[in-house]
Image (cartoon, rainbow, N blue to C red):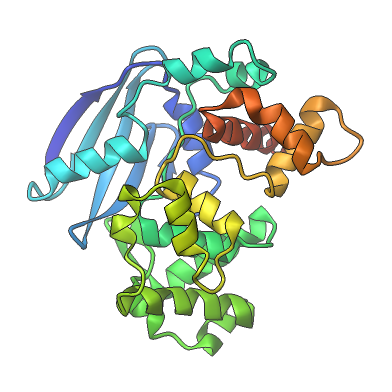
Length: 294
């Protein structure tokens, strides 16, 4: 086993990151010890890392532990991207201090955009979550992973595209997938193993190129593609105006009698660029906290 200590420039609130990760029952979060287990694929090999937070919001540091030295360097580089340790958050915080979102950003100061742990699981999760309330979406995703995926060192891995492509629609319907959602997940997996969709090159493409590539896949529309850009690739300037959560957050923020129109959302958000992804995250976080308090 190896151990590595990383120092990160503040502000960075890992406790709030853990709160958001804990919304997904598949994540192995320990609030007492401030740890999370991270399942990763490095060169197609599954590995599990443990991330433990030390320090505080302004002077954060982390202890990383893993089993194999073989993929240590690449695994740490992936973690830096996943947890947004590669770029300081101070510039983002400063940008929103004079904005309409200043109170939300102050309440959740140092909350980073944490990426899904690999591209494939991000897309599959987005498809599963389509048109479902968040609670049942997490339940359905958990059933999918625990039925067809695998566990290693206490962390859960999504089934691989090869495994999912071999599933029958009836197997997914048995865990309460709709027939169409089952077709979408299996179809996506088939596209990948047949070489028609290469997720590994997505990082090199522009936002629009990624969008154009993904929406050609049956079952992937704009909402799913935008979520992949945000939580798969970590693009900084995404604002999914069709997202109901963001619409509800804006309704509450501005005291609107109904959800904002697309034009109103465009008007609100123009000053938030080039960090629209962070505006999206903090708006989501604002209504998650309201839900937790009920």
